[in-house]
Length: 292
Image 1 (tube, rainbow, N blue to C red):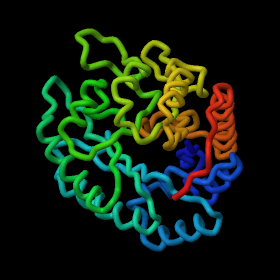
Image 2: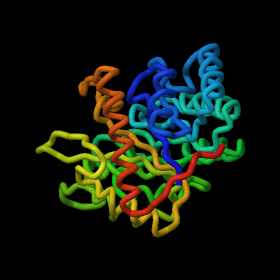
Image 3: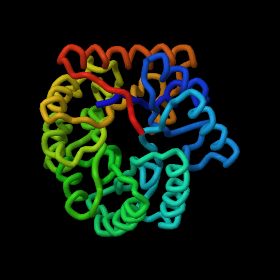
């Protein structure tokens, strides 16, 4: 098992992302946003600069946190948008020797009808292109079809050949369970236990609900059952990545959440990583360095 994180929650500056990663003693970043754009969308000269800086500081990219089919994309949007993102991502992942790409299953639709067959059709094509390039697509349980419940996630697994999962511990806490007839939220531990055989990557996020308000907190302080999930991971000898996504200084899916200062974001990220490491130490679950 190795540790990594979304260092863009500290800064959009790649130098800051590298600095905070090295301060935690880690050697990889889950790349998402640089200079306000996703890594598969930044201009070519900036991408080359990023590659050179990562190489100079011996920091790897363990996963592309792409925007492909994510919560900002509708299943009714032109499919070419997704396919163009896939092709750009593949070229850049080859350049950085990255083997995992985070994808989603398009935003939920209003009402009951979710056009799932069209989602499956698109995701089959997306996944086949990544798989043909030697890249594993991992679906995140976020504000998308698969994130509606563990049942919906398993529907994707059953219908999309080669698809694997990145399990986010915090998203169930704040998400309605659409497999139920009432308004209850999802149970993170139940979700994990139902899908763990297909999990290739982990996102650590913790949260509580204050009425309808989402409050993101340090790992272990919320309702994400993180210590229980970490124990489950150790029990199954999970050896993949565990990536921090604090959401305490910035929330990428909520433009109204605001963004903390660089100093506050840096401090939060370091404390978040250290708290996760203490939780892991408490159960004798030891991390290794990421190896590309």
